[in-house]
Image 1 (cartoon, one colour):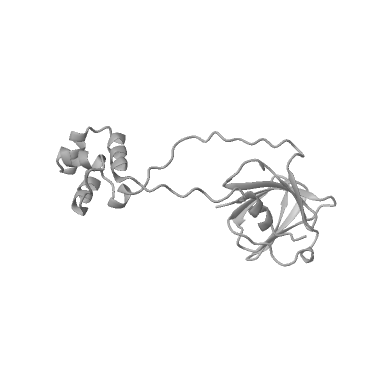
Image 2: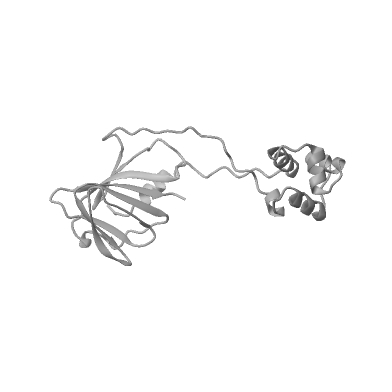
Length: 206
């Protein structure tokens, strides 16, 4: 089987496409910005140099402001015009958690690594964590470089490994050692231990 982790990344992304963003309502956005500053309609209108009635109509979707009015609004709120059309960041806490007991991860064996996917029950993850047993003992065990999108973090749990990367000299890593690297750069890991070494890998999915 291929040693390329792209298959696991595809599995982690199988929860589907993200829902399309809702169109932004300028009136609601202006009201949110005003309330975030703790201003009344009168105060916000004064700051922007607009009539209170004009600002009220904008917030209630009763009129489309001219570009000059938009510039006044943005200036009064100390933001740029594009920020008027940028949705506020979502601040709610998702409260998600996934616990994987030892040995209960999803197994995915390859010719060179034996992967155990962690937190497999969570959908739309931003990271793919997995425990890997390193079977490979030489670069010849691989069918070329492993490379994929994102960044990757490696932490040695047991044994000694050698990390090969496309643009750097190989580096030996022991228990407690770690490495963080660009995963689009070719990389392979072999075990230098008599027994198969084990590592924790975390790969970004964005």
